Image 1 (cartoon, one colour):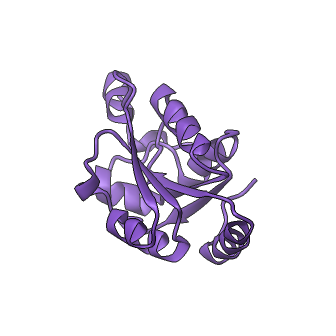
Image 2 (image 1 turned 30 degrees about the vertical axis):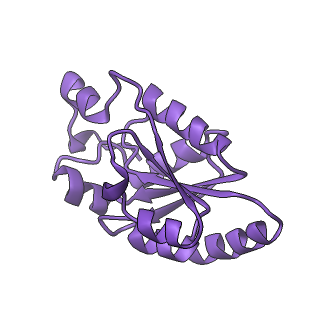
Image 3 (image 1 turned 60 degrees about the horizontal axis):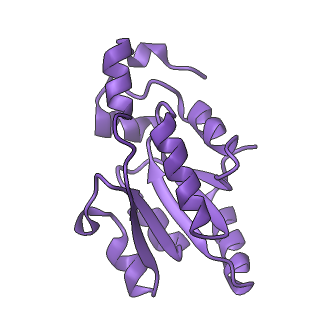
Length: 161
């Protein structure tokens, strides 16, 4: 499996919406998948018929998290996500936020983790204006990529391909 382009995703989503499917979108770096991510993605998938993940590119992760990130390459992170039953498709994006992706894809449901408030979620207003819903899922306490990186002493030099 391989991540898809926005053009292919849009065509797929239009066709799915026409048949009544509910499209769920979430995004993130997903640098080191952990129990919190797995629960979050499984929960997100149960909210609809199709879960698409916007994945921050390596450049985007570095811009957001610092020059020592990501730990894992975008291709590795994408493959890990696509290996999960919960994730139907992945789109890699270079911007710091998924605003453009959300505007283009127009998901029925936008999902983020409990570390966000609705007014902080990029794309929330646009999704709701189109009749969609914003869902904030609870975090799994004790699980954090940043925490794992600090505990293990990992750096961007450890990037996996």
